[in-house]
Length: 162
Image (cartoon, one colour):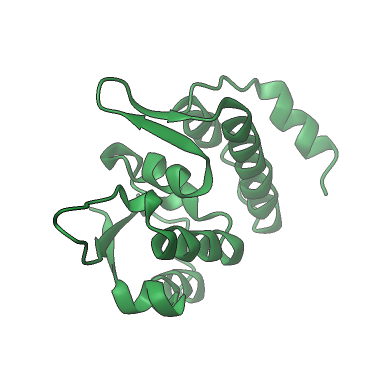
């Protein structure tokens, strides 16, 4: 069952990451970050004008908050609840995109390339620092965006750690 983190307008407007920090720091301190099926969902409570409802990534305060979150916890996408669409929503905060009612979210291809590979490299490096190896799960994460990664990439990264 995912851990739900509620983020409200005040958090967004003040760039306050405390709702996330409380959860992640607890997982880190208790050394339970890598145990079981840990996953996160964000419950976003942000009032909008009913006549001009925007997609959440189109609200500057929300997007900026997620950019800050990503800079402090760049490995957080690994722990998002992928099955509920949380990873795609997170990517939408970071990657330029357009939304089509017929086709759904359409990411800028070059920006998505950079986002996915940056996350793979960052998370893999963080895993190395923590004595964890999960290349199959990282391959699954990339696959959600349409990328097929070979085992040889992870062998190369393991052979030449940063």
